[in-house]
Image (cartoon, rainbow, N blue to C red; front, side, top):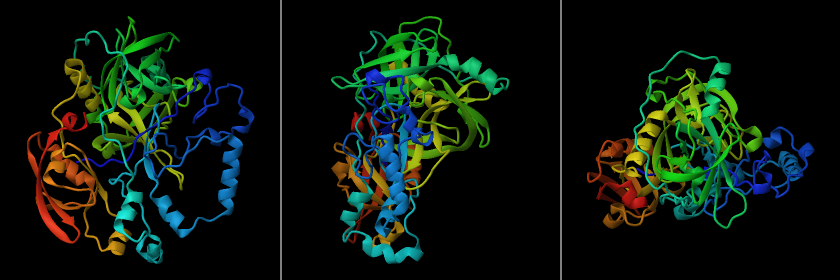
Length: 472
């Protein structure tokens, strides 16, 4: 089931400042005061929003001096109880490569709320549950990403397969072997100044490039910069917004192609390394290393579930579409997001799309130009905080924050504001429970939802539809 809580993060880069490591919207001039930018000020912005759909997000982009003054000012003031509560809600998943940012809370994230010992803060909540949830769950976009890049005249033929793990490499050997397979991508929106910045992986020596869909979303042109500094215009093979995988094609030959390993063989604690292009051209082909922190971590993206690899490897803006390598130098993940908070320091929680997922989507895009056969309900749900249940007398379950137009859920009468108590007779309190049940079914199968609405309980049966038919 769909539980939307975030959109991609990455700053558009002004064309006149491509070599600048600025991590928000840059000045049109390269002559900015580097002396004022400490290493801390080069870190990712806490939050940023671009398209006006992120009520929980805070705009960023002020000068370094303003940020420093803001930090000193915040250090002098203790946030009110209401502000602390709101701050707890701002634990956000951020995609980290190149397109504009939109933030959403993830109902599957167990976002901290005031504990039972802080019940004196309950009066600070809005008077009605609708007012509370309108702030707690902000609007999200669930439509298929629009990519206006010129398509290839003919899709390349072929099929990609995962390879068994080989001999372990040192980090030096890994970098020497793998760095030439990672490229930089600049994608441009029509009639807009600047460009989106991200990474990509060479899939085949004739110029097939894998990246994240959110790197090229809403763009009409893309350039791929190879490790030898050649810049090639790219055409679009296909893009899938559900998996966040896109394929580009450049006119080139004899490129060093990456080898993809089996993500299913990963275990928590395995050593991995990421290569990408964080923060702009200055830091192209940066290597960072770490371990696998968790596997099969359930997340949500644009209202659709994603199962990702979690790693403590440093991942920053511009890394999206880059590679997460095992110590044999094989791609086992495509980096696409990290976790951040506006009110606390969060480090070492990054995510990557498993190579098994990427391989499956790549083959579908090469074969059909799209991925079909994935079932969707068409509703956006999230967990209900304990203090909200106590304040408003709500039952335990999942709050429906949106119903997608054209879905069978809409047709059968599920409404925003409903609370899902159970699915197919099983009580549910997390989106992961519902996603697991949905993913075991096929398009055309049905799911029965026990719904609570204004004190009344009802059963509603919904037919699963193809994701492309709902969000396409």
